Structures are given as C-alpha cells and as structure tokens.
Length: 188
Image (cartoon, rainbow, N blue to C red; front, top):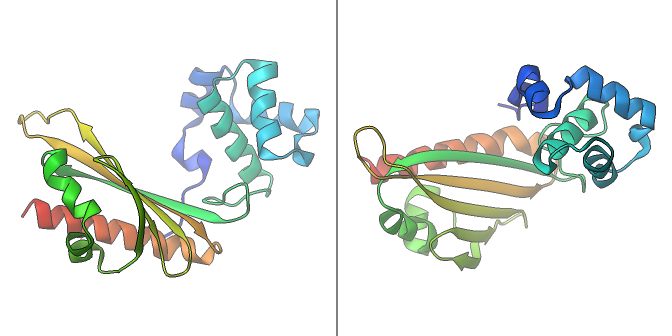
C-alpha cells in the first residue's frame, strides 16, 4: 500500500475549477519561473502572490509540482521525512470516543502499542511519540448526524517524521487497521 500522489488525490478538473488552470498549465508556468530551484515555501508564496491562488490550493499545486518534478515523493514532507494519515468515521458522541484516544489503557485496547503520551487538547487531539521517535497526532472531530440521526465523529491519525519511503505503506496499513479495530470496539 503506498501513499497516493497529489494527482491521484485531486482531479485536474477540480484543480482547474479552483485555480483557473490545469496541472499542465501550472507546471509549465512554474518551470518557466525557475521553480525547480526553489524551496516549497517560495513556490507556494509565488503562486499566492503572483497568481492569487488561495493558500490551500497553492500548497496543493506546490506539492503536486514537486512530486511531478522528482523533488518530493508522495507522503514526503519538505524536511525530507515522510508522513501518512488515515481517518475513520465512528458512530458515537465525542465524549464517548475521547477516552479511547486519551486514556493509556483504553488506547492500548485498539492501538496495541505503548507509546509515550506527550500532550492532549481535550477533546480534540492527542500527541504521542513512537518508539522510533516518530510523532503521532490523533484527532477527534464531531460530524453532523447521519441520515439515520446517529451521532458520529471522525478519528484521524497523522504519523510524521517517518524515516523513509519504505515506512509509508506499512505505517498507512497499521493506522487503517488500528482505526478499524477502534471502530469495531466502539460500534460492535
């Protein structure tokens, strides 16, 4: 399992609707401006400053450009490390789900690791440090009730500072499996 590229995540039609140009057009403009020699921040600022691209879309075009030019691999951060994320919608109230993220024993029931807790922002985020010194941010966001009226929330896991591309697929699978286990635990 690998991390999808920007092009696989965002269709060209959607990109054109949001920014006024296709991927090919943006990349040609960036090449012409000399962006292959720029860092991530400079590219994104140029898109926003010179072409009035919204910040979120400027980041996306920048990541896509870097990937297309071999300057960055999918899942790679500007500092050279790698990051993966996964989310799962779980039925239940935030107050009922939160303890499974924040409490060490309850978290072990579905995560099956004993990583160091370094901080919480109740009832939104839990920050952990894994054994390899990589970082994990667990997040909890309430969602609108489903059509059936049931309360639900999105649990997310962002695992950063992975040492290399070879860790991406395995870590992505780990989080998908762990979040599925949490959902099964809370929604039997």
